[in-house]
Amino acid sequence: MKNPSLILVCFLILASCLRAELKLPAVIGDHMVLQQKQANPIWGWDTPGTKITVTFAGQRHTAVAGADGKWTVKLDPVAANAAPQTLTIKGSTSRKIEDVLVGEVWMCSGQSNMQWEFQNTYTGDVEGAATKHPNLRLISVPQVGTQELQNDFKGQWEAANPETAKKFSAIGLIYGRYLHEILGVPVGLIDNAWGGSSAEAWIRRTTIEQDPRFKLLMESAVKQETTLMSAEGKAAFEASLAKWKADSEKAKAENKPAPRQPGNWLAGNHRPGNIFAGVVQPTLGYGIKGVIWYQGESNAGRAYEHAELFPFLIEQWRKEQGQGDFSFYWVQLADFKAEKAEPGESDWAELRETQTKTLRLPNTGQAVIIDLGEGRDIHPRNKYDVATRLVRWALVKDYGMKFPYRSPEYQSLAIAGNKATVTIDCFGSTLRAFDVAEPVGFAICGADKVWHWATGKITGDNQVEVWSDAVAAPVAVRYAWADNPRCNLFSKEGLPVTPFRTDDFDMITKPKPVTSAATP
Image (cartoon, rainbow, N blue to C red; front, side, top):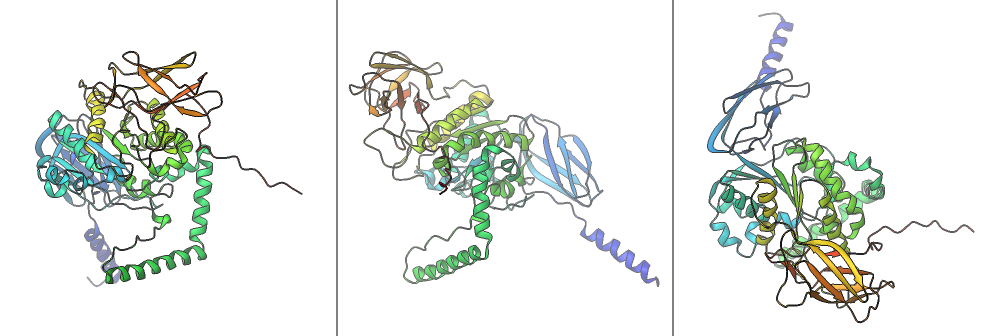
């Protein structure tokens, strides 16, 4: 072959063939669990125009890689199956995905209390040693904060055993283990929690920008970006990083704890859209039954905004996922910080209220844990009761079982003279005061809006009479309305009454109107 042009063409064709390769995302790999009774997307990348054939459980589906190389097929729904199966994909090359199970798949999301590792719970060492569940599968998504949409991550599905369990989400693992043992089917858990994260980081940036309700949020974000991206901002960050390195070396030499590394907000977990692009996007579309969520601490100071932001997050995730109104269950904020001698206002109480109000969305549920927190630690170690309260929702709402699952919630208020009677919806249960016979945690106020601790008395299965000698004409009642309230009302099955207020006074986290400077 002496024609140079022909030689070059042959070389390019050969090089192209050598480069051609079928690629799959990490979430589609050996040991994965597919969601039962649901059409499950399978996707990947190959040379544009390549025909792709996917076979699994007697099914055969084809697709053609698009101009960007991506292809997608949808598997027909199949029932749960604990017998390992092989999923075969043929394109420019072939891949066999081994040990594929079919069962229930749940995503575990939120901030540090969801991320909290199993080994760091009170009995995580013993429980971890006992975790030998080959059909309970785990995968974790690394923390990548970016504005650029990512299509993959570094990770792999693994069976739950003493080694893999200890660093997995404690709440997620316990939740999944209950489902696995009670339902008797394989369970897959996707952990993508990121400690300290803000809700706005979990939502696609463009959708927040386009919603006028979040104008102030985005104006603040853009201002922060402008500052940090400036020459001065970059120099300040580099200086703080250099100081940290020097302080770290000094601490190491003196055998002291290393100082905390300065955070890069631009690549961190507060910037709007960052976690969605870097963490949520890579698994978007993978078949799931639902999401369990524990987040809100980072948004407590902006509870007023969170009242719109949190339901927006759920609605957007459902649109992005394309699987309808999948189940979304969250943990209400625990009690935290110092107890206060007098009743009053609380941003944490306001955040809890916004979480409760989000129950208006379909297929949602809330695990109330106002009794499980630790005043001195934002990370309460008891994750077992948290997980069991979450899993009750799933067992009842998703799997048709009969368990008490919903914490009692405020229903109505009636006032007669100096006494107020609160009616609480117990969802078929009855009220019970814990430890002492009298209900603790109520406050009452008159038209002056000055709150006083109130005496309470359970007067029926679901009613509490409340009064204070300091309030002759009450207008409103609050229960467990504090960062760290003393409260003791439960259902007879041990589910705590949901904190509430009967008033609609302005929230302390409501942004103050901006007043322009007076002109001379």
